[in-house]
Image (tube, rainbow, N blue to C red; front, side, top):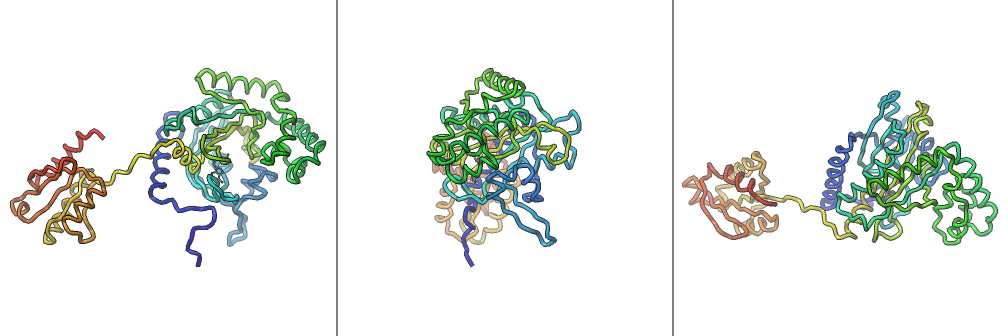
Length: 426
Ligand code: AMP
């Protein structure tokens, strides 16, 4: 047996799991202020949910999905992203009846069979939001502002981030534009890689994402969608920018930002962070006004974003931002004599029941060893239960910072610790 985690996956060890919990807590607090509610969809779906929504010709569907038949022969796929599942769930449960709208957020693992590298995993974790039923450009600006504010709430300075913005047009203006790009690719086919040549037939806009310098060179002279937007898409895009300007959100227009999923219409955006190397997109999203219809549902405009946990953590590390340290123990209850372990056990439980983080020894350590352990846990207080004091109904309380000691009645210690800790500044 290979006892290592599969390629492209990692165990979220406590220090990283703590960061995930921290990020999801900040997210749920912030998102609640904007009116978002949590939603959790299955980790796998019928494969069609993704092929139809994300698009057959996208990298995700054509190369990266974990697809398998279950025992009854159904084709299922581990979710490669969140939006398709949320829109499927919203349709199934009529979360957005005519004229209504829903604001939802999710957090959890996604799966893509990609070539692993720094910031690129096969199982990675995302936090995302979706607004369904909102067609107005103010919703686009709200979603973008929320993504920026989220990273700011994690203490990534706005100067370390770059927000890219573009409009992908809609079913009125994009088909003709796709043809123009396809024609551009065909006219320069000898200079482009095989994949980009193939893209001319399947998904020409993806050629903008090719990393080869020769392809980038050719695509830098391709016609731009912003010059071909229909009047409605043009107005929508201008309004989004106006709203962002109004609230001081700085963006760079990137007419070549296309993002890898077919369902996007109109606004798309991405936030890149400093110090991450090639995988520098920490979050992104856009509008997908036709997705619900593609699933056979009513016309329901929608938009959202997803941010990647692993890359956000790398961005925090690059910015020198620490995740708050865990609370290990407010009080360490030390046992000075093996005959008193029952009393130590009871007192530790009483402290915990009073909402005080308390710890005791479970390894038969000497008193000296226990005091060392208390130091390791950064416990500011140690209660020492010793035979002499205990016989008089008392314990010794040691302040680990000043090393000062005092005697306190055993019956009073829980209340005493409670009031001491209520007054703490940290
Ligand atoms: P996407 O769903 O492709 O728009 O990605 C949204 C965010 O998820 C990106 O900005 C990344 O932060 C993150 N992400 C996407 N793919 C991966 C991956 N393979 N490994 C780690 N993070 C990823």
